[in-house]
Length: 154
Image (tube, rainbow, N blue to C red; front, side):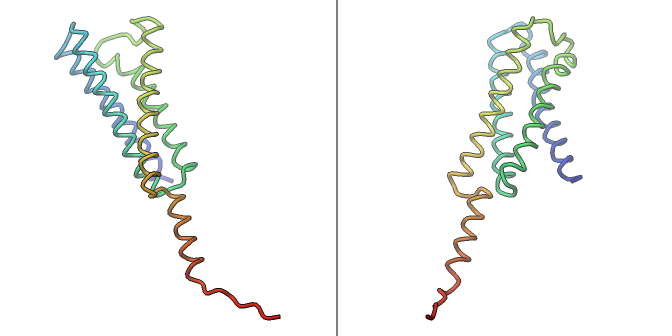
C-alpha cells in the first residue's frame, strides 16, 4: 500500500514538474511571444501524454485495469489541480487572471492530453497482447491445453 501512494506521489510530482518547466521556459524565454508560448504549451501536453502512456503501459502489464485506472485518475486530478491553481503562482501570475474561459480551457486541455496519453498507452498494450487480462487468458489456455483429456467410462 505504501508503494502505491509513493508511485502516485512521484507521478503527480513528475507531471507538475513538466508544467513548471514549461511555465518557466515561457516566462523567461518567450515572455510576450504568444506563438512561442503556444508551442511550449503544446510540447508540455505532448510530454505529459507520453509520460501517462508509458505509465499506462507499465501499470497495465502488472495489474488489472480496475486496479490501476483509479490510481491514474487520482494522479491526473491532483496534478491538474496543482497545474491550474499552483503553477501560475510559481511564475508570478494569478490563476484566474485570464478569466473563466482561460481557466476552464486549461482544465479541458489537460484532461484531453492526459486522457489521450492513457488511452494510447493502454491500446498499444492491449494490441500487443501484454495487458493483464490477455496474459491471464493465455495462462488459462496453456493450463487447459496441458491437461490430458479425461476418458469417461460407461
